[in-house]
Amino acid sequence: MNALRWTRAITGALWLFAAACIAPSVVAPEDRAIAVDSAGLEWHVATADDVPGTYVSTELTGPLAASLRMVVYLFEADGAYTGAALFDDAPPHFEVLHGRWRVDADGLRLDEGIPAALETAAGGWLRLSGDEGRVVLRRERDR
Image (cartoon, rainbow, N blue to C red; front, top):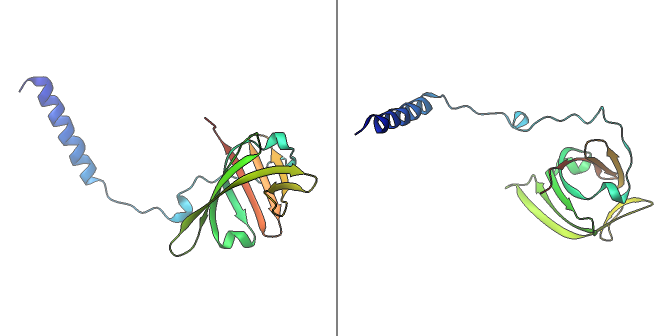
């Protein structure tokens, strides 16, 4: 075996040994996600032009927070949407929906559903509020 092969073999063995020596750890659920504080944002009424994009929830409050862990939405500029909600059931599971969205005088409507008050803040934020609670969404980098 030449010197380069030996070096690679030894380096690989050392990495395996080092990995075996690392103590396992468990991270508490509240420490697993990046904490994002939207409290300092300046919110204003959103228009339909503010909506298109992919969003992930950073905050869920009110009655809906009792059953949901998170939501993800993709709002297309042509009015189509798809979304997934992670329900906190036993076992936890995703439910997916899709349809048409629009913004009218009452806020954001998904299909023929009840409107949600729609606000936006600089940096790609949306906030949806209604009788069932509030969802704060942050825009993800779109492809």
